[in-house]
Length: 250
Image 1 (cartoon, rainbow, N blue to C red):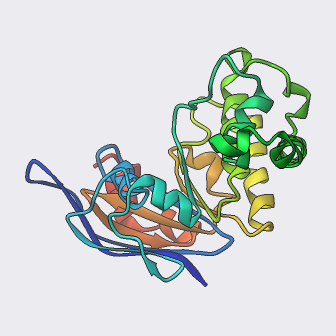
Image 2: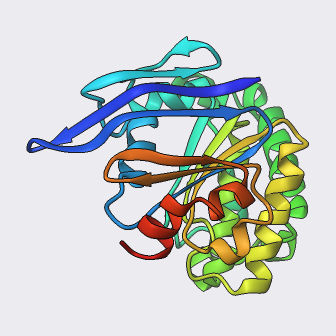
């Protein structure tokens, strides 16, 4: 069953077609990968579906609803969460605190903040939820460490943890294992597989094909703002167009 669909999605920058009629479908509880050479339109595509850019043509549907051109906060409310290539934690906060600030709760309301008993219970529930997520990600031993002391791979997991605190339906990730050691990169993708069993879907842009291809369910290849190939990983890797345009650097 589809969770995300784009139809003839287009985006222009100063007359340049960054996206030229892109049609992509993402099934629920899958890992869908987008690859392509630099400048192919991958980042523009995910920025457009997540509301950071407004499309100049076409449609974006999420769970069958038209979400075309909605701002990022409205996209977020529908259950789409975006993470970035460079993690953006609050560096002076601990790992646990970074997860806690990711989800709004009743204590943030001015009136409710004065009613201690109203939000104390939810505060405790959020801490328990954050620890469950940290345990699932196998970084619960880092809960009280300031984020600036973490490695690049650990920061990526904190980003995933912050996304999970918002109860997402779809997580859109831009190079989640860039700069991460191979062993941890494999651990991260095994975690993604486990999360698909918990009703979470992933749309991922990534360059490290030697690692990701053994984990993803479906692949789209972009070049010059268009999808030039799609299919199962083995089908895409054997497509002459992919070899020429992507693998061959042509």
